[in-house]
Length: 318
Image 1 (cartoon, rainbow, N blue to C red):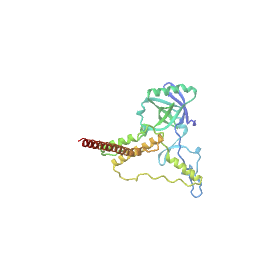
Image 2 (cartoon, one colour):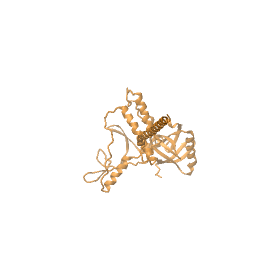
Image 3 (tube, one colour):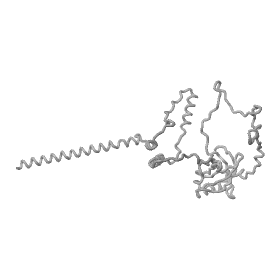
Image 4 (cartoon, rainbow, N blue to C red):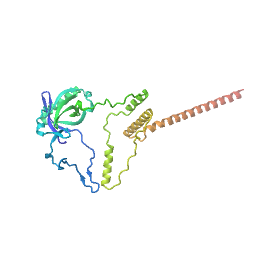
């Protein structure tokens, strides 16, 4: 279990639930150091005063708000600690709303809330089941890193998750970003909808970070003195290339169908690509037609033979 980032309590009406905050995600990115190209010496970021050029320790560094270029108002940690923060040690639930009412753009980081000991087990479970049965999420206030924040409590499996939310005034308006005066053909819209249906998936758990995997292979090869992996085939579209929209949609739908068929084939351990099986279908029809033609020819030949035999019998009788 990761180390708790914060300890406190959930305030749920008159109910208090001791909890521990644990990060719900981890950084799996590969990080690089900077170094001097000529001698491989490490290049570090140092905190230096602009006025005297002296390198400073953390104890010598304070906080301040810059009013103008030449005027900064210092603010001490003691002054920040005295600020009125009623949510300093509690996640205070202020309302319950439908999850659909929370704009995903407002969600920042996510954290698991673990119950703080056996005394918290019952109220923790109570809140979790209340959220599940009501099918709602809890909106809460809490203080962290010297500022009050807004959050959303939601159930994930058997745990409660805290999603940190941006305040409403922190979200920029996208009103000026949408293109104006664009005309679309109805067929283009229908084909775009078909593309979304073709590319639909039940979940996204199967996606992988291919860039990180390739980077790991590169680092491993270089560290062992081996040849670096061959670069992947460049499949990127040429930037700025103008394509016929309908043609691009049609090609995208066909590519998505073929890709989905390949994925289904892998899932069933099939050795033949589904697209190929569809191409073979006309061959089966052709073979069936040939068989039917042979049967028809045989019937005609039998009928001719029978007719000839009867004609010969009539001549002999006369």
